[in-house]
Image 1 (cartoon, rainbow, N blue to C red):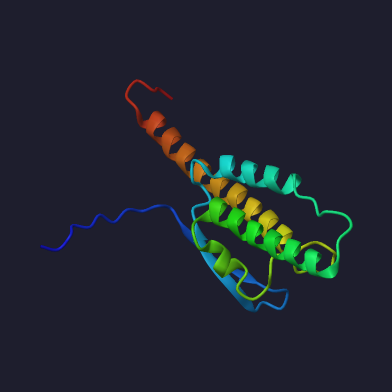
Image 2 (image 1 turned 90 degrees about the vertical axis):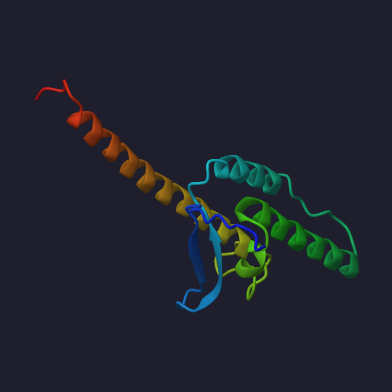
Length: 144
């Protein structure tokens, strides 16, 4: 007997990550209106606020520390957006790549994700509120 399947709409969207020339360098799926995403986003922001690189060390120690940090960053993105997302996000540009403006690549992605969450949540909430307003306006006893 084949297993039964239940397909549900999770609200997930596909996001393509593009470089400054419009070239797609990765993609991932997530639900920017997930009811728990703001909590996870806050936890990830707290994690990054506590990150610091140790002072004096040789090149080999520094390389190991940077490799561990890159892995930690990938783990934070997987926690925030879903398992395996970091593979799509950092497929062609490592999280600790320094961009033209001096930020790390992961910082730009994280800020962009924050913007997507804000934009989509507002649109979905506005749509829901409009539906509620129409229902209330059409309710019996609601004179004009």
